Image 1: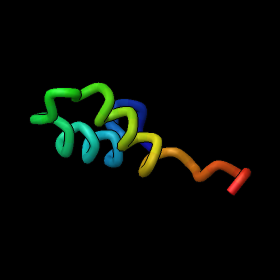
Image 2: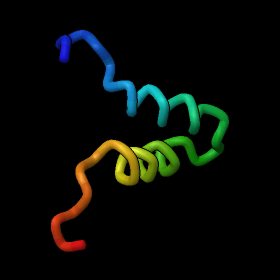
Image 3: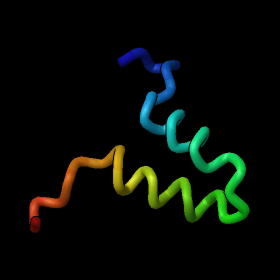
Length: 42
């Protein structure tokens, strides 16, 4: 991945949450759900 290239998943989360009044909560939940590798405990 290019150093200056935003993670497309983060871009998707930012777009999905941009109108959400709780933007930061929405964004972090989205990142947790979609961007991070699933926890090994599952």
